[in-house]
Figure 1 (cartoon, rainbow, N blue to C red):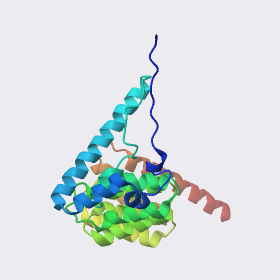
Figure 2 (figure 1 turned 180 degrees about the vertical axis):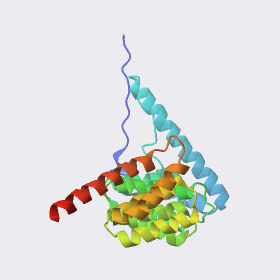
Figure 3 (figure 1 turned 60 degrees about the horizontal axis):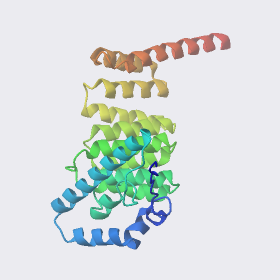
Length: 258
């Protein structure tokens, strides 16, 4: 006789689909107990516990996906979305702020998501991988087509951590998408002042100059970026080709108007 596979479903009351994190953490006993217990511990103890819970949850999700892809049943879980327990343990654990914020956004709660994302910009700069995590949050918002909130996040990051080049580059990109070219160029120059020899930062400034209509300077900057770029980074060369096309198109238009 064949065995019937058991595929447990999550308890709906525990998922972010039904309730935002801010409600779950005060209404679900397991989460309120975790918040209360670890509030009395040192920051190092909270972080260690949150990190262990977060990594365990991610490993469990990967294992469950592997089982499902092979035709098996998903592994049993607590019913919580990724990052929820870790964030209950430590409300300043950056990876969980990113994960839970992203899930909140996907469930049509942008305000709740932004509250978590903006918390990232209040953390000490010594937080591991903080600049990368903030950039991931910004890129997530851009992928959702939410340039205003991405701009808000990057601007807050530049104010909180003015010496981090990546945040200025992210803000410049957002401003360019929003058509605020004067500030976009100024912000790209600020990023370059912090990392003058980085071909990616040079490329960002070069393309922003293209969009702003400063074609001669853009060519100089992009050529420098191309000269410094590793062989697997072809964007400066591609952008030089796009600049050439734009210049030729502009000349044709001007001739027709003459």
